[in-house]
Amino acid sequence: MTTADRAYAEVERLTRRRARNFAYGIMVLPREKRRAIAAVYAFARRVDDIADGELAPEDKRRQLHELRAQLDAPAGDNAMFVALEDARTRFPIPVHALHALVDGGLQDLDTARYVDFDELRRYCTKVAGAVGIACVAVYGSDDTERAETLGIALQLINIIRDVREDWELGRVYLPQDEMSSFGVSEDDIATGNASAAWHALMTFQAERARAYLQDGLGLLRSLDSRSALCVSTFAGLYRATLDRIEERGFDVFDGPPHLSTLTKLRIVGRGLW
Image (cartoon, rainbow, N blue to C red; front, top):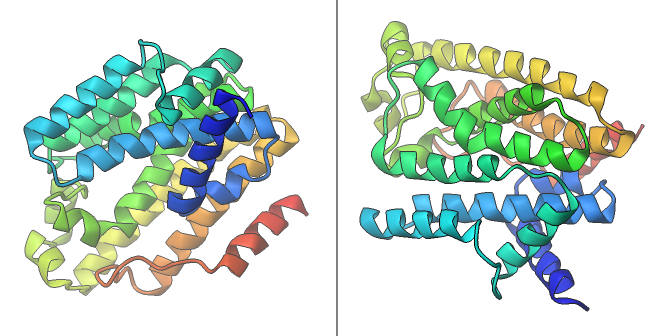
């Protein structure tokens, strides 16, 4: 087994262990594409782990800047960077997309509230749209616009799903002007108040996420069959998660719903059919 093979094995293990939905999508890809996507995921996961971790802010900032600098340096013996370096020699993964992921992690250190959706969308472009752009280079399409839109859609679903988790990190990603318009306060989040006003606000958020998802899935038209199956699978998993949240009246304060392994396999099978 080569050094690259060992590195890929490590990032694939990480993806299976940490990715809630992503791993079920990439399992249908050819080996070379699957490994490259796992390398991208591992890098994005590392950014998140630093930004969301327990280190002091200055230490997080230092580590994120080091992570960015490492993108332009020899990989050394770090499995994630070895795999990512090899993937970048095989596919035209743009380094600016990886830099954007780091920018998003740095933004999480400085910004905990978003005035309006325009501000939030710019953030989502960094932390999720950039993943779409990096991955679409592996899939073999140049439709970066829809890839970015799809990434934003998935991030909007994450924001709905992770309201409680984000609150515990001191962050509120729901646009402040929309919260005010619907009569929802941060006290409602703190106390887990799934009121009628909360339901109306989150219905609005869900409708927007679905609109972005529908637009982003136009990407499928430019993909080969297995890449299209990959994308439609994890998009279907996210859609199913959003549906479950909606069925619960958007009461996410006790934690997000979890799709069973059987449900996930059924979604994969539906795509195959």
